[in-house]
Length: 150
Image (cartoon, rainbow, N blue to C red):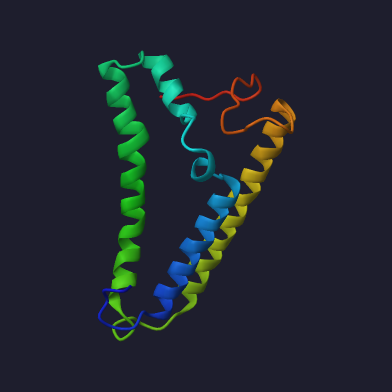
């Protein structure tokens, strides 16, 4: 939006606000304590991939790169491709907001609420399984939830 050469459109501001709402939801439900205590734990997915493929093997590095790094990066890149056009377009070239914009932002708001609800359900479940004092960033081994990596 800063490089548009024009003031941002209303659609650009709405998109930025939607992204900020999603980020706040994610930061609240997936807090990272690395800012205060440092990086001392590894994402559980790396351990699972190492267990399935063997730590340090070619298969581990290939699966780690494709499934844990490349795929999420491409998903974000493609998802924000359309947003880039909106954010960099400027207000003078943007059509006015319409019904489809209301529908899109309503759907996005609903998706954020569903994600927040699912995050809360998962946190409640993990607290029940591991106990209220458990560090949920490192707790693992629940027999009630099965995670498949393929």
